[in-house]
Length: 257
Image: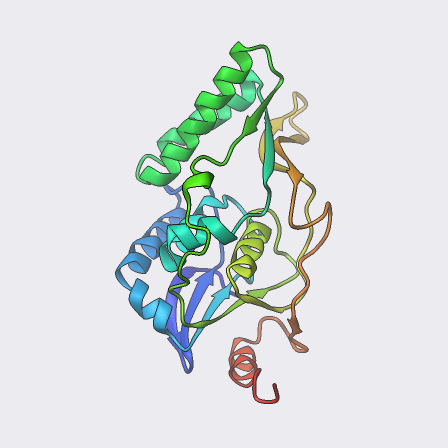
């Protein structure tokens, strides 16, 4: 399975390995992803014009969806992304002191990513305002939606696919939702599933023997239902680790269409 985050050529175009969406850019995996985003900006014309573009999510168990959002915005363009790649149109954050502290802790992690940092600061300001007003929840709004083009140009000429396995969860599922909304066809195996409660923070319990997983936000409306997996349009019948076999399979997917 894909264990790295990189762009490589294959016989029919370009293959983007996205084996991890770790939230911290300072980790080795995060540094790989940061490098991948930089390379994408340089090679964006090549990516858009490739005959076939494969987003390989095998081995990806989630992390932060900011990685796939930034990547997709670069490839498709921000206008097209904003007009199409929406998983939820209504998100509420629990406006607690601990949740606010967790969001503020992300600032150091994403200070090298201006777009992500600006979004994070909007969340922090909104959560503070909700708390000051005595509200238990902060309702996230989609700023600027009314000013976006209603029919932006799709700059991607490539036939795009997103390859998944059974371990795909959390931000990996967000990636599937985003990419398929932008026109990619899901291939491979059925994913895992998640609830409508997301953005988990971890609290070690006093015993030291267990950790509580506490969601910070909830999707009120979503393109996928609660605990619903993403099912591929084309199911790969072999081992999901057989990269060579999958490449040959994808190359001939449309032969009989």
